Each structure stands twice: as structure tokens, then as C-alpha cells.
Amino acid sequence: MSIDQSSAKQIAERAKRRAENAAAGRSPDVITAQSSAGEMVQELFPAGSLPGGTGTPAEILSPGEVFRGGWKSFLTGIAALVKNPRALIFTIVISVLWFFLGVPIAGQGAGGGTGLNFLSWLTFAGGGLNRSIPGMLGGMLGKGTVAAALYSLTEKNGISAVLKGAGSLLSSLKQKGSLRRILPGAFAAVLLYFVFTGKHFASSGMSMAGIAGLILSLRALGGGKGFLYRMIQSVTARMENGVRTAVPAETSAMLAGLAAGFAGITAVTTLL
Image (cartoon, rainbow, N blue to C red; front, side):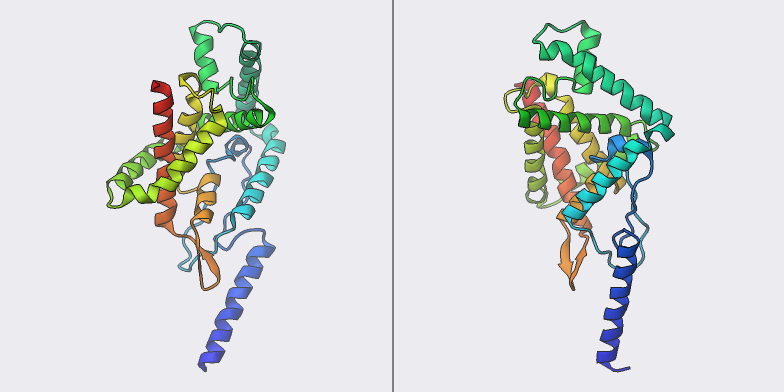
């Protein structure tokens, strides 16, 4: 077989693989849509599914495609909630808590007892209240992040993935030149934190938003899967021979930066 024939065959095989994956509604790295109703409350960041290695470079979806896929899975998860009682109960409970704990906050009323104050902090009940419309949307995003983080800890291997991610973060910080590599992620985490809380509302009472971001970042770093992992993998991918290819080291560095950024800004706004 001549060189031209061999090249043509390789191109044809690659085109065939991409066509098959497109027809199946997935990227060539076989990231499938989530079907578990429990993942509805996690779709902002955590648990998803990644394939085993195939021995060939995987083509990574663009950030826009990852977002669209996540939104579709989110809507599918809402419809499937009735099939997952645990997820349904969690969703109902946290929604009720947000409503009843948020009423006195929105009315500028005094807080309840220590227990109610703790629940208000834990659920980020004050997120988005007494803010402008963009601020309300940011607070809602923060509430979704907190709900996703809390639910993720109840999932199988949820806590172990967070602990594994913490170990990976510490290892990343010890590497030469690590500061330069994690700075973009850390900067993004600081921006997200203030989107969640609002610049003038960031305080110890709002710190759960940052803790939730830290939990989900560590989970993605330790578990190597989920919406957040896929998004960061997409953002850090690079083109090789016309194919968007994952760069694991850059993905891990960005996630480590997110975790470090959430941890740092939460500590600073809590102590000041």
C-alpha cells in the first residue's frame, strides 16, 4: 500500500469513527448522557461518567457542546426525579429549607436560634436575596452549587473522591512551577465566589458557597469525571492533527487552581 493510500485509509477511518460517535450523540471519548435522577442536583459540577481508555487519542467536545449536554442532562434529571426517591426527598427538603429560612432574611428580620442559623449557613439560604436581578441569578447559581456539593457527599465514593482530590491538590502545590499553572483556576474560583455571594455580601455567613465550590473541585480532581471535569477538560484541550485532545496535566492543574482559589477566598472573607 502506498503512503497516499495509507493516509487516505487513516483519514477515512477517523471520519467513520467521528460519524458513528456523532450519530450516537456522544463525543469520541464516549462521554454518555447522565440518566440518574440523583445527578440532577449535581449537574452543575459533580458525578458523571467517563470511559475507559481505548488506546487512541480521544476527541474532546467544545465548551459549548459540554454545556449544552449538561443542560440537557439537567432537564432529563428533573423529569426522572420521581424514579429516585432519595434524590426527590433531598430536592424537596432543601427547597423547603431555602424558602422558610430565606423569608426572614429577605424581610431583614432577625435570625432564629443557633440551629436555624446553622441550617441557613449550611444551605446557603441567603444566596441571592436582597440583591439586584443579576445578583439573584448569581445567588441561585450558588445555591445550586451548594445543593450539588451536599448531595455529592451522599453518593457512593463521594467523600473518598474529595479526599483523593485533596491529596492531588497537595501534590500539585509541591511541584516546580505549580503556582503559574494553577493561577488561572484560582482566579476563576475567586470570580465565581463573588458571583455566588455578591461583592458586598461575602462574609463568614456566606462561606458555604466557597466550601461547596472547594468540595466539587476536589471531587472532580479526585474522581476524574462529572460536568466540571468535562468542562475543564474541554477548556484545557488542544488541537492535535485537527482533533481536540485532552491534556490531563493541564486539566488537573486547572482543577487544583479552582480548589485552591475557593479555599483561599473563603478563608480570607471569613476571617476579615
